[in-house]
Amino acid sequence: MSWDDSDNDKNKKKDPWSGRKKDQQSPPDLDELVRSMQDKLSVLFGGGPKNPPTGNNKTPGAPAPSGKSVTTLLVIAAIIWLASGIYIIDEGNRGVILRFGAYHETTLPGPHWRFPRPVDSAVVVNVAQERFIEVGYRSGANQQSVSGVRKEALMLTEDENIIDVRLAVQYRIKDAQDYIFNVRSPEVTLKQATESALRAVIGKRKMDFVLTEGRSEVVAKVEVALQAMLDDYGTGLIVSSVNLVEAQPPEEVQGAFSDAIRAREDEQRYINESQAYSNEIIPKARGTASRVVQEAEAYQERVKAEADGDASRFTQLLVQYELAPEVTRKRLYLETMEGVLGNSRKVIMDVKGGNNLMYLPIDKLMESSSTKAAPNRFITPPEKTTSGNTGRDTSYRDRGRAR
Image (cartoon, rainbow, N blue to C red; front, side):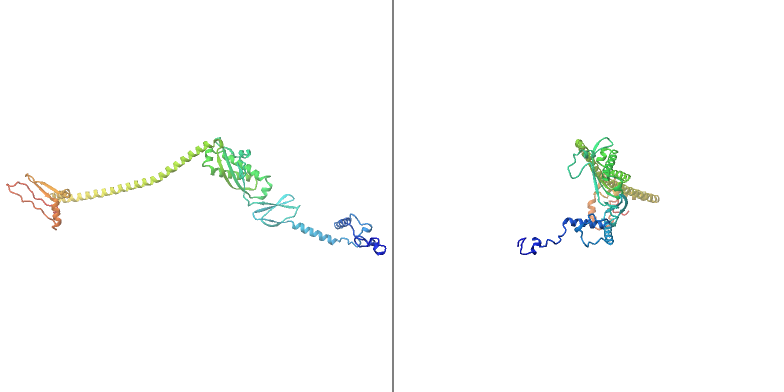
């Protein structure tokens, strides 16, 4: 069908694209819709329409905004604004509340509420995290040749020697308010205070002391001095530990100092070996001395007892001698001879007044006496002769005679 078909009058008033009649009202375009929306928002927030509709552009029957709808929107906006003030502090953190930029309070872990921005703002500070700084070196990257790091490590000792000291400090935040407000840059302040405390401690001690047995003392002194500085500055930081990573002479004289250190180690080793030998030999010497003393004391007691016994025996003999001198003398003589001749196997007797010798085989006599059970066996010598005899008195008693 063509647009201007003369046979059908009805089709003359229709749009070939939409099918509408040409005399019907067309919908508003996009610009008109945007302009209408702007006018409604202006009326809603208390102003008149910016572009009041004129002529045919006025939308018939548009409702005017009411006061109730405006209040509802304001209440909803206020609730959303107040709800934005809810915040949660995690464990190990502290929340510092700022009211119009000034400190208001510090909150603990848990849910909290503050006035939303721009009234209040919250700064969360981690007070449980262990942080650390390094003086004289940097871990990880190859920055040992940096001039600034090199200058940090060089320290002057009391005896005017230069040593290379590398220190690590572990710290954490103990007061969030002081950490935020008292110092502009707490980490930089901590590092400078650490260098100052370390140089003060090293400068009061000799190099040999720092390099050998003085490491623990240096660490303790630096920790005390550093914490005192941080408290004076009010940084809100607390030092957890100080670790002396390395203390050595400069590289230029490292060889000479290594030789000196080895000599000290050898000296200490010799001292330890001598001490070990001393600990081993001294107890033995003390034991030997104690044994000798005890043996001497025992010998002393034995000699005293024997002397006392001999004295007592002599006293008793004296009493007997006074009663019977001749008998006592003879008994003592016989006992003495018995003791002298008791271990002899041969006895040769020289009889007075004669040239004959008498030989007694004691060993044979002892054997025969053991075979014959004859107690108190006597050997009777020949009887005394008359004047015709030799005149010798050969009578004697055998050792078996009863005393």
